[in-house]
Structure formats: structure tokens, C-alpha cells
Length: 362
Image (cartoon, rainbow, N blue to C red; front, side):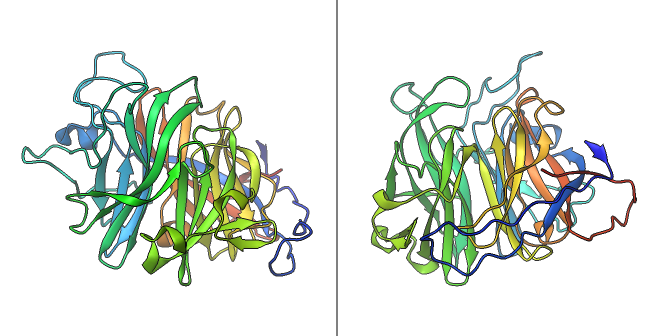
């Protein structure tokens, strides 16, 4: 990082043949003020039998924000690193009504069993090369129903590589206490729709999607919010617009993309996308529309400064709508989730907290 530097990013024009409005200039000049605010899971979740977990994608329903975690373990052996341990659950969920994340996120509770321990929401067979686990990749709410997009993992391979049986949706009608895995829609495990980020714009839910693992690009699908359980209602972004044919989907971001998160940001009046880029860390892009064009990536969190980082998930609503955005980030070494914040700088902005504030651009 170089103190006081805000790089200029050149405008990008929509590729020929792509439908959409005329390209505008990108406005994101750089990112500044990266801060690890607080630990989310760990000591605060021990009473729920959650000593090690990861992910933590976030969505809202009513006054609550729900945090959805992946493979979760109880008390761990001294010196243990990464995933593993006793009391294995493939996924668990916490919730909060904390609207001020400046000092960390206060968890109000977790979805629990009769003993008061965080319970597995979506069961898995836990058999390698069959179904080793079921991982929720993102959640969303429509009316009084909550949904989780999940992937059924057949086998964890080399770092950043895994095999998926299929991905699909599960629904809860009782605020997360019980879940039903839906027969449809589902997506093949070898498709580009194994993992998603979900956001609503107008009548549509947009689902930015990547293949299994961390080395594919981003495709995009959309569905009217009231029709999420109808496979025929989904449309896929192509070079010429939208198509009901999944096979015609093309990439909206061509990069080595790991877990990702996309939200609309009012400060920029643009979309922002955070994702893991293996070997680099977490990067951020600015999008003029849900399908782009998308800017070149800027490093937001360096893998050198935070070894073992992955799964950057932005908080919804006001916590990611201004010049300062909050997101969860998993760190492999303690195998827990931490809250980070980051400041967005537009061209012409003067940092208010310190004129010598450190910024990163590309």
C-alpha cells in the first residue's frame, strides 16, 4: 500500500453485442481504511457448540439479519487448525438485530436444537465421494419464506478445488427453525451455478454464480422474486441478452473467482462485487449494471497480510450502502469468521478521517 495514493481506473465500454445502456465512467477510485473490527464466531458462539466455523453470508428478513455458516465443529483440540473436530454439523445459522457494526456484530441467537445448541439446517450424508457435506452458499427472503441456495459437495479436492453433485434451494416457513430441500430448481454440479450471491433489483432476484471451486468465472441468472421455485422462470445472461437456456449463459466476469458477494451501493450509485482471488486475496469490482460492464479488480484484502483468508460476504442494507462497507471474512488458521470494514473512495473524494489515509487502486 502507498499512503495517499488513489489510482485512476479507465472507463470500460460494453462488449459489442451486449444489450444494455451506454457505458458510463466508473467512479470507484480506490479502497482505504481496511480494519478488522471484531471476531464474529468463536468465544461468542461457544455456548451454542460452535467453536470453529466459516462463511457467514448474510441476508435480512424483517428486523433480523441472518448469518449462514458452513461446516461447523464443537470443542477443538489444542493447536488444531482448519476445519475438523467433534460435533460436526454441515451448516448452522445465527441472527442479529444489531444495526451498528462499528464495534462488531452482536449475535442475538442461533437456530438451536432442544439442548440449545446450534443445529444443522440442511442434513448431509457425510460420506466422501458420495456427499461429504452440504454448504449453503447464500440466503434470501421472499415474503414470509426464507431460502438457502446450497451445494451438495461430493468430495473436497486440492485447495480451491472440489466436486459438487448438484446445487439447489431449500425453504423455511418458520424463520429458519426447519427447512425443506426443494425438488426444483436444481443445477448440475458441473455447471457454472454451484455457488451464488443473491440480490434483489426491482421485481427480479439476480444470482451471480460460479462453478464448484475457486477458479471459474461469474455467470448471471435472474428470476422474478415470486417465482423462485419455478425452474422455467429462470433466465440466464448471454452475450445478446437473456435466455431461458442455461447452456447459452456467458461470463459477466472472467477471472479466477472464489466465494463472492454482490450488493448495490448508493454511495457509488453502482454495484460492487467482492470475491476471493486465489493467490491475491479479496478483490473488489464496480459494476454499472448487474451484468456489467465490470471494472478491473482492486485488491481489498491482501492474502499476504491475512493468510488463509476466504469467503468475503458483504452485509446487506445500510451496512454496505455508504462509503464504508462491512463484510464477514473467514480465516482458515483459527477457522472462524471475522468482521471487517472498508472505505470506498470515489474520484474527487477527500478522506474525512485522515488526509494521509492509505488507499489501494489498480
